[in-house]
Image (cartoon, rainbow, N blue to C red; front, side, top):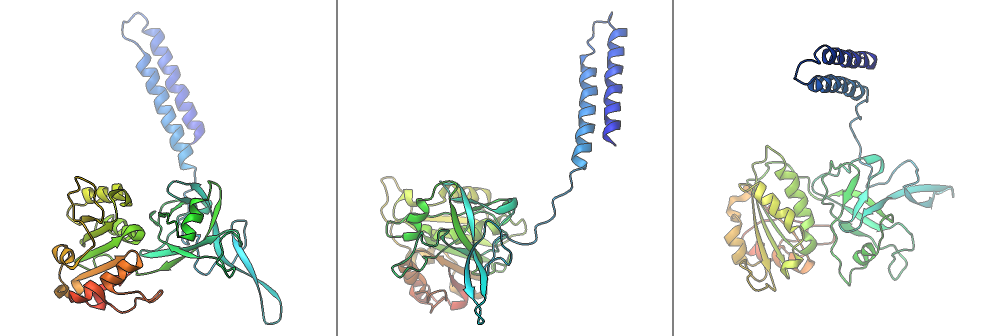
Length: 341
């Protein structure tokens, strides 16, 4: 139906309604409903026409973020210049400055309303957009990894959950940003390609801000209608107010009660706390996590402060997994059953 035909239809309904009203003036019933009907049909027809003329947005194929950097220059790209063997300047892009638009939860604006399309599970690395804004004692830029908590298909936004530590140079720097400031972001860096229903059970053991990659896995896996994996989250913090994403985690547990169970642990509980107290121990793991004897059916993800990770699963070796150790090794779990974020 063309817009012209929609207009003619509207006039036809309207004039018909007026004629009906004039010829029926002696009757008690009102003609107003017929006028509304004519206008409503015409409006619907016009809306259908205009909506049908809007071309569908093409499917996004590529993330605006790139672990190697962009090959084209634009106003949002951060770059540095290197020199070839012949001495010719060569521009190399490494980080993408994203604008901070919400400061409470650190939501950054992605260009062109695109989605991040980052795979699960993966992280990003960030640095100051100003080359001299945040550097170490040697003048080198300070770079830190963070895991987004926004869905990979969320249009136009990338959300980072960051806990401020007084000894953390990057967290203090980010907390000092204002809305409209930028942060240089590079990635994604894939940690562990998640495959749906690869395991019968996945135990997620974390502490503090180490919840972010575990939360990323949970939101991705549980939203899949075909998911059959059961998840058990053991999440420890110092006090109850330190529990990050608690509202979102509780909402997931309520929505997926058959596939998610959560155990919160506190080191310094307030009066009235009914959950476990203290560190995540062997007894806690044995009580809530399936045994290592299930072999390939069970997987354990660990993420938290380095001392906690070392105590539970052994120290990481930089970006590498390092040897399995700690409580999980004592309980018989193997390196194939444990992954340290």
